[in-house]
Image (cartoon, helix red, strand yellow):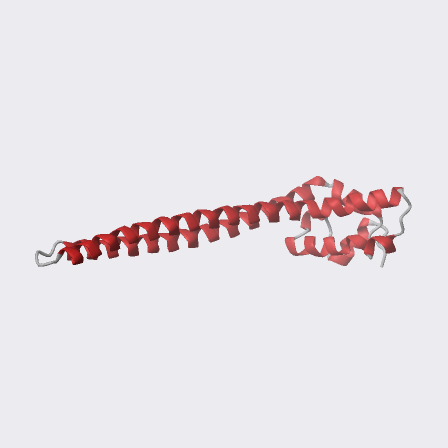
Length: 170
């Protein structure tokens, strides 16, 4: 179905005003865009407050997901660091015993050093993880915001060059 005006699109989405466009309906709206007249799609996108709200919803959702990930990561990291500290405390307690041979003392000291290396390695892994998560959040947010504009821009260019819609949908 080719949508010729805004009212047809609003009716299909079950809304009276673009201000009533929920996040779910924005996704449905985006799916309908290939079937819209270019001028109609542009008129709707030009109503910037609606698009701005959509963009803000996308950013808010990404921020919440990011905060949740960071919170879970922080709890996990705290648990790991406490575990390493407890292991070192046990090893130090063993090291204070008077009846240890030189080899036993050396072994305990090496174990304390090893927990320090392992903890440092875990910290480095965590920093790489955080860099990766931040990159994905930024990429996802940018892609979501750009997708609608790219499609409308491509459709405008195609209309100016008289490229049929069937080519765009292929």
